[in-house]
Amino acid sequence: MRADLSGQVIFVTGGAGGIGRATSHLLAANGASVVVADINEDGARAVAGELPGAIAVRMDVRNPEDAERAVQAAVAKFGKIDVLVNNAGVNTFKDRVEIDRFPKEEWHRIVGIDLDGLYVVSQAALQPMVAQGHGRIINIASVVGVTALRLQCAFAAAKAGIIHLTRAMALELGSKGILVNSLAPGSVLTEGTRQLFYGEDGSFRAQMAGFMNHIPLGRPAYVEEIAEGILFLSAPQNSYMTGHLLMVDGGWTAGYMF
Ligand SMILES: NC(=O)c1ccc[n+]([C@@H]2O[C@H](COP(=O)([O-])OP(=O)(O)OC[C@H]3O[C@@H](n4cnc5c(N)ncnc54)[C@H](O)[C@@H]3O)[C@@H](O)[C@H]2O)c1
Image (cartoon, rainbow, N blue to C red; front, side, top):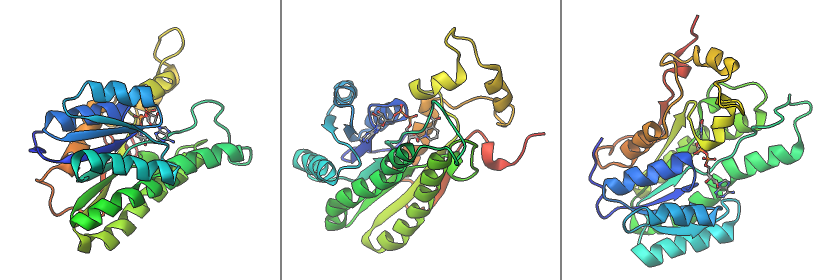
């Protein structure tokens, strides 16, 4: 879709990754000035370098000082933040195990980045948003926060937490002119998920072909398709939606495919 984002400043966490990079590109193509924030500083710089008027900031979403410094850098450069896209996130890809053996360090890593980090960055970005009297926060959740997947207990808990935190934020921030929504991607082809879909020899894993049969559209999403949902939630056309969960999942959560 097309939206007029000229004059809008949009802060994208995890902006160096698959969905974050595609989102930064689409928002910039629609006129936004993008702040590409990531723990991967070189990756953030590379993405910002591809976009007119974008800047890169290094931040670990778990660290409140990093978050405040990154927000201040954005405000120093552009004078405000109109939209925060809380997109940074991690999951367990190797050695997935049941909860009775799920490593505590892995639990704390995933919940610490995906849920706690979202709270930390939102709190920092809310300082300028509340002062300016408007803003938007878009929280990237997952289908796994709606319908759980085996062997992903920490990710499922963190993403479900994001969806409900979004509602709590929407209740508190509506009167301050701030809309808060979440978006749940289904399976998305990125560098991170490529190893789930393809074996080392490059062939599509038979197990994943079965999994795709449970998705009405029969395939994973492209990152650009997730970015389109984020563009809609950022756009001026979306003026009355808050506390909402937008599913961009190829129909995954619509029901069971038999
Ligand atoms: N790819 C999928 O299938 C899928 C499905 C559902 C939800 N999601 C969600 O979408 C979001 C983006 O995922 P993606 O597939 O683009 O992943 P990705 O791995 O390609 O990108 C994630 C980015 O987050 C950054 N990051 C990680 N830890 C960080 C930290 N502590 N501080 C700051 N940045 C950090 C990484 O450096 C990376 O650039 C995540 O929240 C993910 O959970 C992805």
